[in-house]
Picture 1 (cartoon, one colour):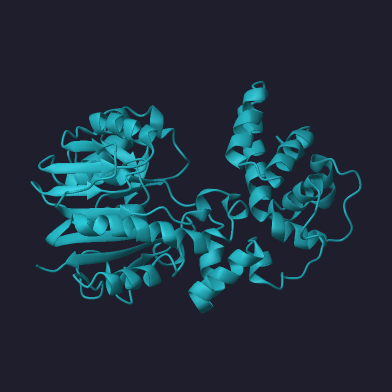
Picture 2 (cartoon, one colour):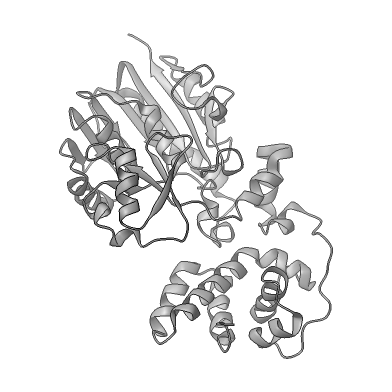
Length: 407
């Protein structure tokens, strides 16, 4: 009932989202412009905006207009079908006047409509997952857990769990990563916690943590994070190295590297060296290539991400990824390790690309995931490492462990 009188605000914001603007930015601007809203009003506004943004295609199907239903009708369908409000109450809150004609009750005939996906993306997931596509796509519509990674330089996981409990945050250990804690209950204000300011943990999906574990860096080694990005995995690698050796971090975004430096200070890391130009002429023990990709793996993290993707990314990004791997190739010393990883579900960017690399670089060999104790066996598939929300509860990731042979 906190939505009473807010329909025009919701539909106005929704029109911006439907035109392609990111829902998080639209919501932020809307809340800043209406600071008088109560806490309940702000929460229900966010819930309505996020859910209608996510379920727009299925709601449109039930309205009989899957492609161009107006925002007010979509809001009505959400309140009536998903929130379970009586038709007349939903119509009043959505301010549609007379309720729309009887909604289509049938189960949508296609995966795209059932799971509210663009047609091309649903077709892609059907090819990638086969009979498991429905299960995978359904999990993209369930919010992912808030997962923390303990900073072992400062504290162990059990002690962090106790500290967080004292700060009012309940957690449970992850099942895949020995570094992971999942937040239990309502979303807390993590950035207001003293434990975060003290560098005891970072927010990092459990699947992302698995990629860092596959690198297996050792104290005293020289390790390169070639696509450091925001630096979450760089921090993880540095902690595993116990602050000993050299950890090199490169990213073409200078601003991200500057922020990484600040995060290193908070985490207590002093062995991180930022590279402001692409590395050349180095021989390192281990390289992590967490490559830029089509980012289909974390789609559940944003209700409108799927609608802002371009199909062309599935075919354009492999060229970029091959270039990055070719840059990494001469940097690995004989006997060293190269871990290639993405957060996407696309064989062209994952399995096919790695197999092509191995054909072009015979001095490297694939370390088969099957039989390896690096990660749980359930993540092994055809020699590679794969995790996904419907199988493991984390975002979808892919990884290949490659070793350079001697000589």
